[in-house]
Amino acid sequence: MKDIRCGKCSALLFRAGQNATLGDIEIKCRRCGTINHLRPAEPATERQERRSRSSDIVKSG
Image (cartoon, rainbow, N blue to C red; front, side):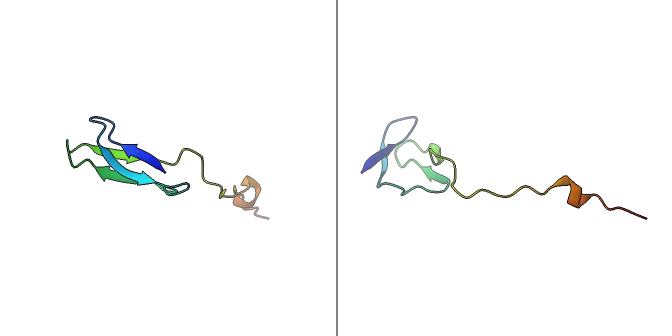
């Protein structure tokens, strides 16, 4: 388990297991009221495909 602490006052916000925070999290510290924004350390494994520009061009003729 990993302790997640407030960036301002270091109060314990929660304890997280491996892969517990897969998305963005916004949590308010109970002690000082700071809003903490947490993001995953690694980029998401899902990759969106790019659209090719040739499919966007409409040929008239």
